[in-house]
Amino acid sequence: MPMPDIVRKGALREAIASARAALTAEQWAADDAERTRHVLAAVDEFPAGTASVYLSLPGEPDTSGIIDGLTERGWRVLVPKLRRSPDWGWFTGWDDLTPGWAGIPQPSSRLGAEALTEANLILLSSLAVGRDGTRLGTGGGWYDRALVHRRSDALLVALCREDEVLDTILSEPHDVSIHGYATERGWVVR
Image (cartoon, rainbow, N blue to C red; front, side, top):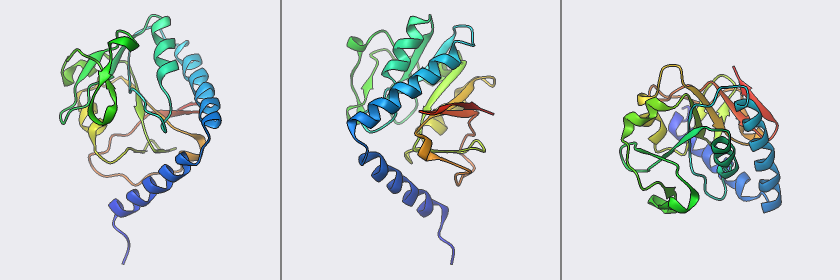
């Protein structure tokens, strides 16, 4: 009997978590620097607008350099306020963030789920991506619920490691397709 998709996704999540945990701090830093460079080079091709960017924790692709680079380039940055229902706030500086759910930094402002309609670029967290536009998140479905409120022309790009790029990821009806991904090796948008 074939394994249910949810089990296969769970096994993939565990494998990626183990591979990420095995990386040294030096390797993470080098990969993050390269990923940041690729993202900022790509956004330099767009007029400044509004980006939505997750606030990273250790053990996932870092977004601090990306957020700093975007704000330096005149972009407004929305960051998630993790609650059961999606919510967003403006990034107004690192000192203005407070610990939220699971210690994830969050903004003090609450703009509601509809604030995502401001973003023309959405940088998503992921554990893996498919070259076909599929994405594996952490399993809570928060971004799938949040992306319902996006603009139809918003560019969806997941951040991950090159080793986490696969041909495809098992998807479910609620999973939202992405336009591309950024790794330490480059920015790929289809």
